[in-house]
Length: 235
Image (cartoon, rainbow, N blue to C red; front, side, top):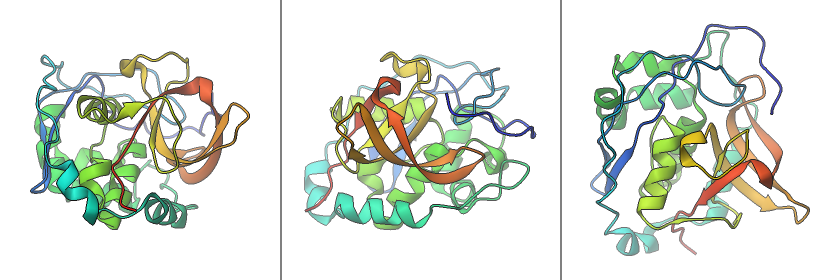
């Protein structure tokens, strides 16, 4: 497990929510609520008090991804944008990043707040690893392939529902972690981008909200990986 952060106010997390289908006109449709996770983790959920989740609906999948692929940036472009953010850090309250600010003001936040409960401003101090990944997708024009959400489990379920989920650490893949190992999507606590497979049982990554609330390059053991989501990048 990554080292624990110094003490600070707990962040809001969005737990046990299920991501709806991607609408390429500009939004992922929310279908689910969230519940509390009482164990603060260095890179994962924070304490929350949200509504309990309704049943998951991942029946609808992305039907336009093939048509969008030619317009997508390459994995190298997405990774370059992620890499430029290295060193961006949160404030002492666990907020203040441009990734959180962007999400608060996005259409997606207005959708997911109905699922998660509370109010949109709560995202401003929420755990932001998924917001970082989503922001990079937005900035590079790859949002329809990278997806966007504030909660890692719903994000992973979206990739799986769209049949873009697997176990190979390809550069540019969105990687989902569980600190206790295993392959259960409900155990996911963190997300980032794969930079490369190191060939020694580890991967190099670019992640937001890691360490002490910073964007960093990390080396992670594959044993902590639940799975990988594969955006359909352009050439």
